[in-house]
Image (tube, rainbow, N blue to C red):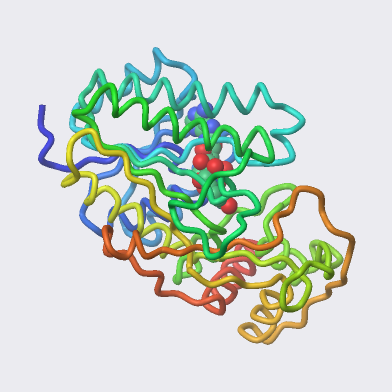
Length: 343
Ligand SMILES: NC(=O)c1ccc[n+]([C@@H]2O[C@H](COP(=O)([O-])OP(=O)(O)OC[C@H]3O[C@@H](n4cnc5c(N)ncnc54)[C@H](O)[C@@H]3O)[C@@H](O)[C@H]2O)c1
């Protein structure tokens, strides 16, 4: 079995974070195979990756819940030496309505994947986790040592359970190494403007909502509450540029390759800066020159007041640094949003 070529299997490679990470992996010299059942994406992402990199990535259209199909796919790619596992359903609200669908997809998918990883001796595994595991943390910024709160939704619980499953797996199979990346709020697009976040039916995240309001696809941005105990009363989040986040995965794979067998390390991947909703709106207007329609609305149930990352551990052990600003996020997201609407 040839493990020299460093071929990485990216699950969810046609999705937002997966497709941008593939660009960075190709740039760093990895070969990539994607597996994505396209439940929340299209293979247009592969065209966009090709437009940016000049490289065509193959997507295997397989549902991770279909163990036999997944296993056969691993048989076809014996050169795979690492997995970056993005594929999951991610809507908090939908997960409250359809908890079993979320548990089945996110948990069965992960377990099937780890069964294959063990059988085919794929040693390096990177898992997409989320800062939502911290809930309403008492002390900010949060470090990896900050105690986790009870998850607010079935989606959040699949992330906490996913982390535990990875830990238990490497404890039992110590020839493997795992990296858990807790993403803060990924946003923005590739600098080329050729690829970005494909607009969903009902975006739930602030930056896509801002783009829709600026394009006139929605009437306005509603700021959910201006009476929180923050500097301007709106909630604080940590927005991390998608290409900074993408780079963290390439570094995580390099780290896993050298990490002691049986290790399972967790890293915060955030900018380290808390931005209020009103500051995000101001950043959009400043960096694009476009005036945004917005108004204050009531608080949204389940929103944490404030969260932002301490990323010292990622800086120290992965050699990772966020390099792009909030203005870069808004500028690149806007370039992509306008292009997408035109296409
Ligand atoms: N975007 C965020 O704000 C955010 C924040 C924290 C964590 N995450 C996590 O990062 C990962 C990637 O998120 P994203 O924003 O790129 O989401 P996305 O929906 O754009 O991408 C996920 C991809 O996985 C695929 N997929 C889902 N279930 C599958 C299955 N059973 N088999 C095969 N493919 C399947 C979808 O078709 C989609 O292309 C997810 O695990 C998500 O929970 C995202």
